[in-house]
Length: 310
Image (cartoon, rainbow, N blue to C red; front, side):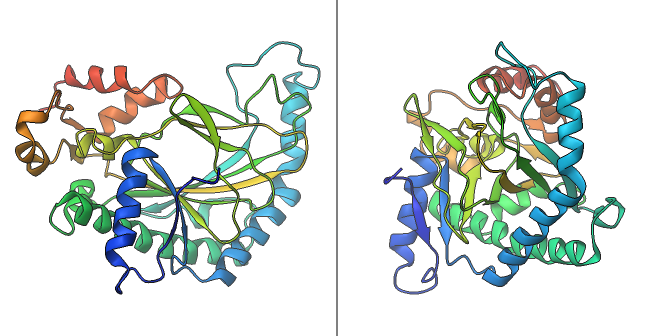
């Protein structure tokens, strides 16, 4: 946990830029995850989003989750449960169009806060993509353009709560997987831990830290960088105590975006490249991912080579 990359963005436009970029590069190459502090999102907004998310869960979702557990007969589970996750979730879509006004049971205050939060996160995601471009030696805006398609990126938020679980050894909060999309920004509970990533064959805790934003890379960035950066397997451990809040926002390619390794990266290291990742339409990848989310990513990449979408 001590070595988990925590990156302070405060002086990114000052004399520390080079050092900060090096830390981001190391995190992208060796962790697939990092935690940001001084990221520019107002702390009062983070506090408001956290307070309203927890209130909404208690008011609207907690009882529903208990009833769902009872209806599936999960209170007395004896054997390992491999086909479900111990989580209560709902999804908000921001881009290309928002569905926040259509989600039932959200107070006006909560809708307003989530809209503002999404705008700040969108800006941060695009800033981060440009920092990755700088590290990769790609033209500024390359990654945003690669995600753009005909209508601009897909951007949405999964709001999750992981309630206390009587038998955490038998069920996961969320089973191990890599994320299918682009770049993911997470506001997580600063008191109840549970998120872990797989590093060098070991599960490592992602430390809860007040007001930080956890960033991880999805499968599409692995493809575009031709494996220089990797999406990393992660999971949520169920806990017996406390409900863990998780607000994960996914800045993903447009459904019709064509994803392929950046030619500049292939040209630069042509003699060192052992394999070239496939070229595909993002929507086709998502179709495959929907059925294989909790399985290794490599067969997904392999399968995309035979999907002739051109």
